[in-house]
Image (cartoon, rainbow, N blue to C red; front, side, top):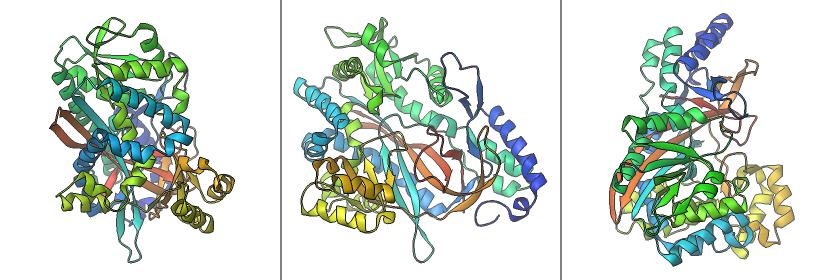
Length: 476
């Protein structure tokens, strides 16, 4: 196996590559690595393979296991942040003044706090994303890009990609390499968290409500986790914000009912971008947050995943606030941090602006947004910062060191895209699932992993955004 993950003899054989592409596409369909082909209503029957790499990409074994090992600590960290109202208030004080979306979320958070939380069950399903930064000596360091605390996707499809790459490698005559593709089942791991929270809610008739968009190309990713729940005889319904607004209500005990069904869990697979909300949808979000239903995530956990919180955690002494007397845990988490810098008004923020304008190619400018395709690079950083450097509008962003991973070569298989050998960069995601009941953490697990790969022509964007494709780590 070549250092970049593709066998040299295979790379030189164009006829074999073409045969492998046909095998790969069929294998993806057979193994259920699927997406809808077009975003139109009632199009669930029109499907194709989700985009993926022809070959698995190499990932150093030590850094891979480091990412898995730190995940339960990140689960605890997110949960601790969500319970610390003074920290969230301090961390987001400047951001909510200039970022309307974060401000609206924070208003709901304040409303719930003032009214008093009535549900003691907390469910977190998150995904921590990393890239491997190349050190001067040729080694690689694991650096966190972000942690997604709402609608962390592709756990379903990631459960089905290992068989595809195993089969491709076998057909390519690489049986030993095929054995290095690890088993991976985030579907089951995420469903385990949902099932535990549903069980603690204590009503067999109550449903898990998937809050979804009207048009969902990534429907199969949802369905794989959903099917794991049905296997456990846990009922699931899928509804949109508009459905909750029209038919939802709280009874005298603040139990949530939608279409006449009691809701045990609201699983947000929507609601992480400003365009997901109308005024009616904001009212529906508030009703759900006020309810007895378990929210995944609840509003405080949603806020714990903001970029501003990520930047604040990198300040000296902040991790120690959440893990007093646990220096090993602090060290493990801090080892994954890239450089993070504030853009608040004042000398420290001014210094960040000057640093970014002087060397924009060394940084990433990040707004408080999820969903991919929002970050700014290079000349874009200069364009934005020149316009807001003397304004409070700059506080809507944070600055992060740009991670410099080692590129590899691979073929990216996407419907309607010509086949070509691409120079690629990969991002490793690790899924976490936890359930807290009162003060007791009753479940805290690493639920699996995800590898996404994109051409180095693109600076930002995920699979759903049409930039990255699904992949598997080949441990080296």
